[in-house]
Image (cartoon, rainbow, N blue to C red):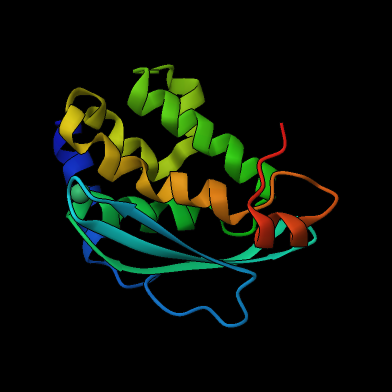
Length: 157
Ligand SMILES: [Zn+2]
């Protein structure tokens, strides 16, 4: 079996899926992410409670890669701690930007590993990472005051 073909199928299927493309009830954060180089736009909606991502969804338009990446990311982060979701994001960035290919680490990304080959297509990198960058702004990375982090977006060093 050709792995590249499987990856392409995962991306195509998820780009057409409407499973995670909906409005969320009572979101705690709605963050817009834009990739002007391709015309991708997503609006990520997160409902976070006690540091856990209870539910997530997105709306938007864009290329298959950007839309599939958002949908797959949501499958992966739902029900997880915000910190855990951000940690998975770091693995995703390492895979795409630095060519991380350690299989035991990449296993954690589940279907998101389908974007592995994007690391060889510089023009599409921004499409693949858009959702994950938007997530960074949407969830609180600090345990203590999620509300402040959601409304303020002030990066504390
Ligand atoms: Zn794109």
